[in-house]
Image 1: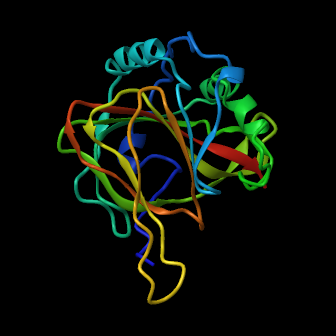
Image 2: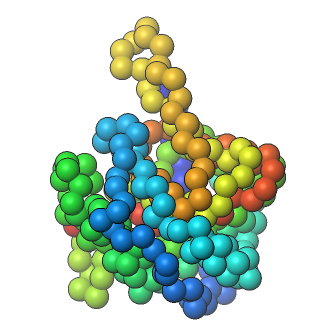
Length: 239
């Protein structure tokens, strides 16, 4: 098993806490495709799921245009010990109102709650992590191999004990390169591991993948041309 170079889903680094980011005036989540016309597709059972066209192309364009105007921080090329190399521009804000809106109005809530295997998400899904992140990858930028960690949080107005279990990435653009590649482990000693599973970018597609102790080793490949814009949160379940 590779060493657990990790990505923390918790609070931003101290350097980003000097000035608390202002909650953006997010564009309306419109137009969207009704949930009954969307579906969750399984790429790898219990590990990787996709929802195509969760965001329409028009909605993606509106969001990219808006997000290009907000202040972003370029991550340092030299990570802390135990963390993976990540070179991109990012914005992070705690916004429970937007997280709730995204969960309820995009179709995610309906799709997750009606998914065939209710055990997939490791508990009763309460909604999305209010820790909202925006990533922009330009040519030459990437996120090296790592695991995403689960985080314990207090969810909602009632501060319900909860934890994150699945990473949510919504791709707002396509580009050359920038795919997300997963590296399953060998099932037995002396047996070659399975081939990597590479998920290409599709505008408006949501990628869900399990994180925490059962997270697959994965990376965001280098962007070769164009820009890769991603909206990020996590599924939250009751502890």
